[in-house]
Length: 388
Image (cartoon, rainbow, N blue to C red):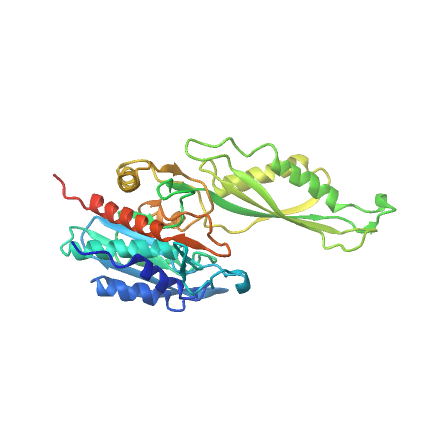
């Protein structure tokens, strides 16, 4: 049996590329070089859109037959923040205290390295694979997610590529590798509320119309009662007010306008359209004489669920066989590119421990990298196991 490439060395190569969205700085070159050396067909494609940066993406495939199992992920990372705050420089990929340190170590260059190491080993041992292994890699997950996975999937479909199942290596675990696997995600909808008033002197409030008093009442109607009580696989939807602003530095002036922004993370009981209609009704019920405008940002984040079936069970078995843990099936957390992938095939998310993602001193344990690689390897073995 061929040994896996060194997953730590692969992760170091990726972390040393300072690929803060939308920059790539060689990260896709690292992926491409290793995939080409293993016999994958590799294609690089960039996408553009109005008012958004051009984003490079990578598609690779080993084999032509079905079924096709896809590893998906992103090479872009969030900014490191103040460099002087890091114990180890964010793009140095240093090893210390049993861990690999650097921006993207957890989210998600470590996960990419594990999937790459597992796939290269498996393909070397199965050159005549009865099926296909593919990689869908973007540089636009941490950004607007307009010129990345969503367009890469459309591009692949137009070329006749077919996918059966996907593993997305986002960090999903809380305390230990094997704790949690994501089988769905909530949707996200951002709303903007503007309340018009009449500016005036605080000593003569009857001559003004205070928009702050109105917006407080309107926002209160959005935060209670709860939007729902949750569903079979999802927690209750949540609405968080993220900004309230009147732009008023004076203490003796009633402002002319008040603005607020809120974000809703919604479950499978809602669509953006039904949710927007519900919010309109809530405001209308308490508005009174308030003059307001409500709008919603465009969203490509819709809630979805991968039903428990053979693929989910196979992944749970792979995790349990390696770690002894039964992964909790969860739909918690923020959004991910799985919201696009689920339209093309069944997708689960399983990766590293997410405690340090996006933080100063992001780091991954070396043992965790090795464990995740073994889980991915075992998943490939189970997925392509010959029928008896």
